Length: 127
Image (cartoon, rainbow, N blue to C red; front, side, top):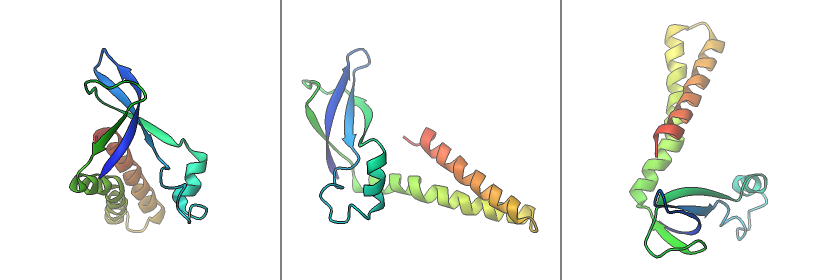
């Protein structure tokens, strides 16, 4: 998968460039934008995000660069982002069911704690 990004900042000291990624590039041309969850959320949140990459030779602010990610890497990252928190949710519920079989509210609490812990771990440790 290839995507085009705009260079919005260059840091000479750290030899990095900050790239701008548009979050809603496809939302303007889709016929279902009014009823799509992504299209609706794009109205309320920033329309771009930024990230840093190592500086490439000969680029200046305002240039566009193309980055490519392998399909296998994309699948792996999507799995980490979507499936692991869901597995943690169910694992937390099953673990609490073994410890407290008659306490449904405790089971729900364990499930949500495990879910949010997996989200935090994914955010901070998966790069």
